[in-house]
Image (cartoon, rainbow, N blue to C red; front, top):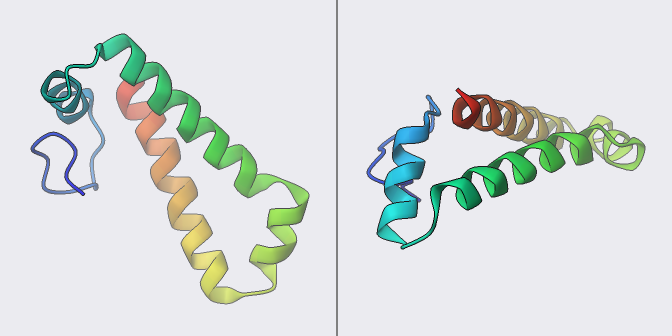
Length: 81
């Protein structure tokens, strides 16, 4: 899914998210807060004991979890820039 008009998820910056907020007729502060909250909760959930046991038991799950954690952390950092 595109965010704003962004073609890639490799770099997270506020610009595509601001475009998305504007196109969806949403306030940027609310969208930024929601992105930050969801990103942080994703990382926290992936680090909890139960999830860690599941992740360690399956190499594909570990790969997906690592990618999800990296992208969530990058998203939080990107919108906070």
